[in-house]
Length: 200
Image 1 (cartoon, rainbow, N blue to C red):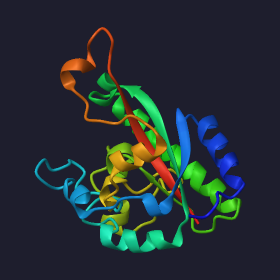
Image 2: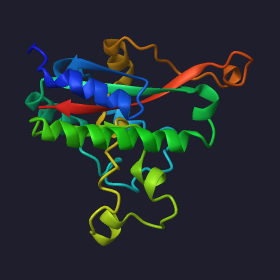
Image 3: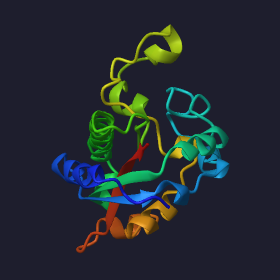
Image 4: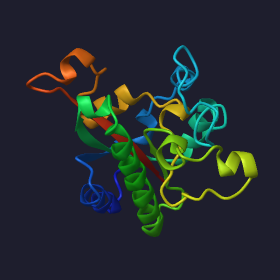
């Protein structure tokens, strides 16, 4: 495992300044990527955005290829936003997810400026739902046009098969399934949404 380059402290500070609740650097070799997580986008409860965006299955990079590309990276900046679970189960989830994409994109751009030429951001949620929900079709897939939100939209974490429970454990964060029965209790349960930037 390589030592963290000095720029990573700056990246963590930037993540927090952009609105992340917490950010950590973890070894890229520790990232777990499995086909079954990407498959969940389609079955058994098909995601409404399945097949509608370049960052979602079946158009996204397959987990097998993503694993191969990970060999070019040494570190990962993972960040999160803590949110009341009730918000993640309702309409407030969309603006939080948009913010995750915005942070991932900003961190990716800064990382490249700092010398991480291969930096790539990934974020929770589908770009179709978050940025083009009012559009009938995706301009990239349907018209072969440039993405109108390329400065913000990033591929889905789930689409490439990232096991986020492992990633959260590496970062030292509690993570588990949201219990809808507890979401509106007097002491509301907390959830999180997250993104990451591959540094290399």
